[in-house]
Image (cartoon, rainbow, N blue to C red; front, top):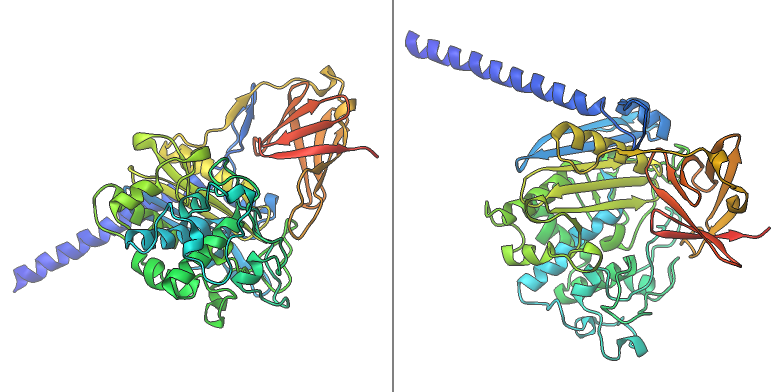
Length: 486
């Protein structure tokens, strides 16, 4: 008896020591990431500055952040920072719900792929064969090429409507048919280019996919997601309910604008559930990642077959898969997505075959730059090599004639809920500044050459083009701004 008691005592001591060491190791690991945030750009001759997450949250006016890191196919650590609701000082923890924004899309894509897996839908069939009531309006663009699930999921269906601004708590809440028909706060979803011909991001296309899932399954989208996707993946802190039911409110983070001010009504609602309606946590998104990784590496079955997951992670136009964006090849293949709703900014990325991933969720419009700084810290610490600061050599702003470039510019497309989006490019002493009055930001630009500039924090580039009648620039190789003549 004494011997068995002694053995148990020794085992308990060893177990305590093991967990104590593991906790200490995790604490050191987390602290290294927390205090290793990096800007996107290092100017040649300057030292590399590492920053703390708390300081950068204050700088970027981000009240709350939540992070999850996956290593070797298992959740390594998860932690929340700051406040979920500054009105009552509720703090963020690993169970705080955030709006996922467009990270909803790769999760929602699983619903359509599940129906394909079960033989209830075909990736390459005309979606009008499945749709009841509302249908894609046929026109000259759809005469020979049709809108299909494959094209909707890869943003190649030719459908319109980039994204959605959401609805306040006092707004009337439209149905899917209302949104698709333009009876909400965005234009009608239609096809305005030949399906399959180009890649163009379309939240409208994902709303069509949502309707397909509902019409095939006969279930509301949130119910289908809960029963067939979220629950099987173990995502217990996630829901596609819109509006969010009362039982989740105490766990949900409020949303904050670019100035760090809480949005009226705490958050917006999104009837476009597949495109923007998921509420979740980084730890739950880690379960999505692990589910995909386990299938890819033959560790276990998940909600989809390996064949379908392989299709999901096959590059189409613009390196897009069936839901997520893709980068890298072979063992370095990554699947990823960003997310942006009013007052929420998020990002997730993970290696399909290496078992490593990171998910960052923030409750602020300014969360993107902070998220990038966290991603660079995580990549640097774990030596992933996916987000290294860029070393640049700058020229003096006085070395070139900046006068023709200075002035006010307008985005060449309307933003839902905002309309025209303006930026100003000004020179203050030797500094060149981009003023974004809508986002409340002033961005200092470094000079790479006479028509080429770089945001010294985010690394986004600004490239001008001049013609006889137009001065314009591309921002981040995505958004075109045209000079407004006063």
